[in-house]
Image (cartoon, rainbow, N blue to C red; front, side, top):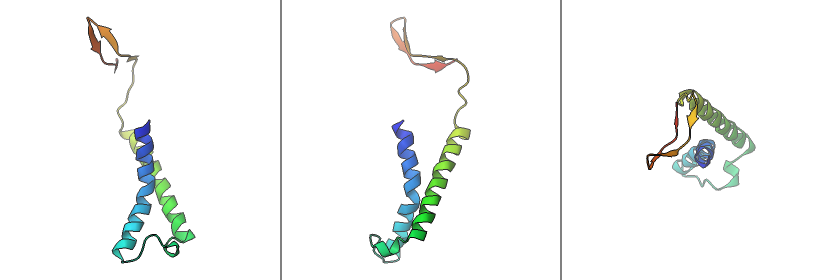
Amino acid sequence: MARSLFESLGLFAAPFLVYALFLVLRARHPLLVAHWSRGRLFWLTLSGFALVIAGFLYAGFAGSNRSGVYVPAHIEHGRLTPGRFE
C-alpha cells in the first residue's frame, strides 16, 4: 500500500522537479515566488495528475491477471508454503 502511495506521489511531483531543474539550468533561483506563477502551477498540477492517471492505467493493464482462488500461506509437512493463486 505504501509503495503505490509513494509511486503516485513521485509521479505527481515529477513535473515540479523537472521545472525546478529547468530553472536551475537557466541560472535562476527555483525558490523565488516570481517563477511559480498561477498559470505555471496550474499546468504543472494538471500534468502531475495526468502522470498519476497514466501510471494507474499502466499498472491496471500491464499488471498480472490474478484470476482464480487465492490459497493463503500455510504450514504443510512442517514447512511454510507461501500464498498463491490456483
